[in-house]
Length: 66
Image (cartoon, rainbow, N blue to C red; front, side, top):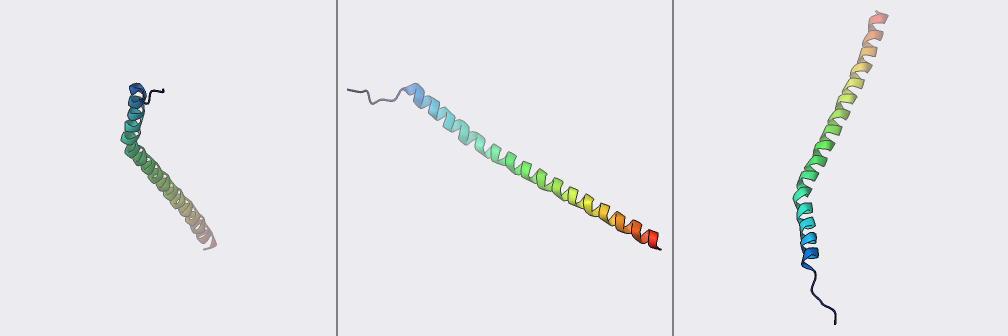
């Protein structure tokens, strides 16, 4: 007849992996949130730079026409 008990080392290994995953997941999620925030902020700055450059061209054109 087969032994129905699970090896304690296997149980311990699975438990340790679960604890590690549950323990690290909030910090990983926070890292993803910070990365998304940094990316969206850089896009905002890039858009502002493009708008400012476009207005500089308009200003140059207006100055040249006068």
